[in-house]
Image 1 (cartoon, each protein chain N blue to C red):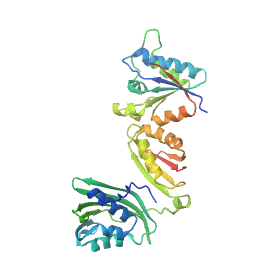
Image 2 (spheres, one colour):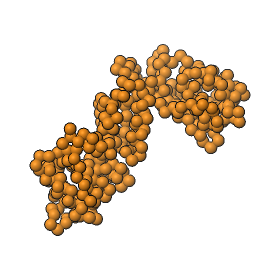
Image 3 (tube, rainbow over the protein chains, first blue to last red):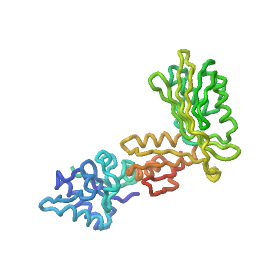
Length: 121
Length: 220
């Protein structure tokens, strides 16, 4: 039985609030000892790359670069959708600490094993 | 027996690709009688092999060449094969791993075929790698045969799941499939995919050249 919590994030720089909010929730989970993952799809895959969080700051929310680092320090993982990363030219060389490129099967396996998913529209 | 992509033989040959498939399947099964049955009696054969360029004529002569290369091999394993149409011609490719009295060899041959109106092959242009000596694989045989599949840079959005399923279903239960991949997502995905499909991930190796080797035992 998987006890992972998977928070889906689909936005990048173009939507700072939407890009940040999943990390806020996921960081709470990680900080409280949960096995937390932010699953980045579509434009959010940039967030797991070098410089990908630069300049993303929504008033009232933490600066995403700082939040990202804190989340990873708390044991959180960032999964980047492989199908979204490939057409954007994102490879393993571009990744920052804590992020991994994964495919759909990896996510499906966790969900089948009981992982909970949280979506942010 | 290694991984093969041999298509199923059509019931009735129609067109170059079907004829080529019949020939390929017969050849890789070393059924030289069936292979001969789709060769024209006046077939023309051109061969570029390590010793040089050679030609021969006739269906019997052609089948004699294939027989001389492969009859005595034991084991005789088909690692990969394909037959495709190329605008009126057919392309046949196969890679074989075989054992001869003096050791193990890998050999790959590419054939371009002309097919006549009577569904018989009238010409073969063959390019051969020669018998390439490889390391002894007896240790593999002790724990079930080992098959290989290079997934290249296929990812989950490029049909990797379908290809992987196809490849592993072609090997017997209990045999091992060593999948190599260079796609970053596939490195995380393939073990999950294998487990979801009911197979056992035996090992994961990272050689350091950007690839990943995942050894999977077919479970069902």
